[in-house]
Length: 111
Image (cartoon, rainbow, N blue to C red; front, top):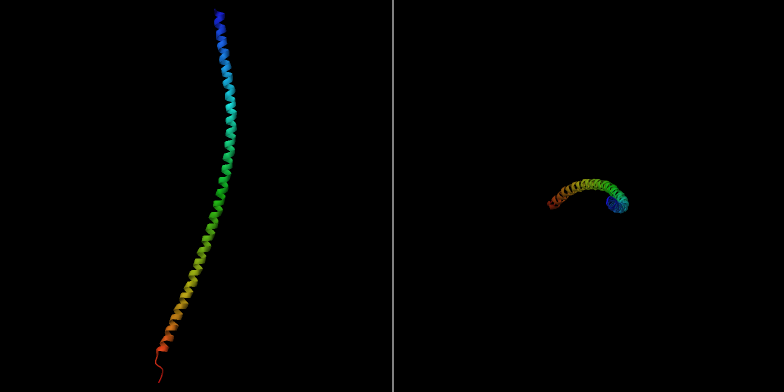
């Protein structure tokens, strides 16, 4: 009877060991797959990081270009305003001169 019980226990243990070995094998396969997936994700993340860094560099360059264009435009408007001020002065001079000419034309001729 003791031998029979011992045989049953050993048989159950052997089955359990077989199941555990199968589980270990399956777990190793899953871990290997996960390791591969993690490596792919890291590679993808490196790629995304490189793209984001390139976009950032482009944005920095574009920001500088926009700043330069804004400075050029501002300088151009300042020059245009100075030139318009000169033209304004010339029109004022012309108005005064034309007023004098009209005054002279409206005078009665000497008799």
